[in-house]
Length: 188
Image (cartoon, rainbow, N blue to C red; front, side):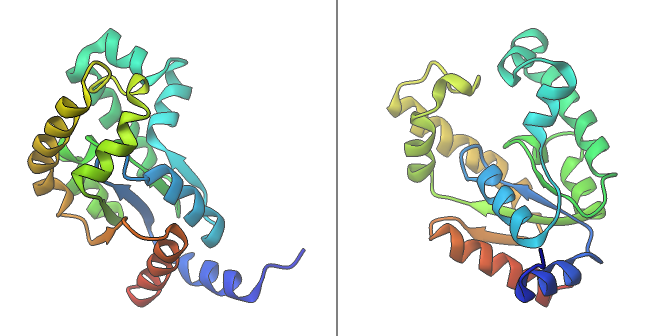
């Protein structure tokens, strides 16, 4: 089956590009967007959390519980160092990945970084539905969750804003995908 012309042109233009690292707070849509970009650009997609789970045969919550946050962050950094060697790949990182062990500098050096920015209120709505899957927020009330998100986004913003591009995620996902494709083409 022949690729549509637009997809072929996008994919052929992107083939010369380094990997794309999607960063942002948990719940911003890095995985969802990464899968859509992967399909649109014809590039492989890796979700860093899923990659860790497959490598260790454990859920992120289990790795977190067994190793603590510090041990998890070391594991995450080691797995990121593996993925930066993948060519022409879209990588959705964990929310904290850019904030530890010079991971942000490594991603900027080895690929194109895109910060997916979302308001704390929207993040709270999204994360309240999936608290049990997220070790850092599993036991928080909605009020505590919003305060936690605001505090952590403020702490992480200094790392997130080191990304080459920032994309506001509070729009239609198809428009966001199209905007990123155009952004990548213009900055190839």
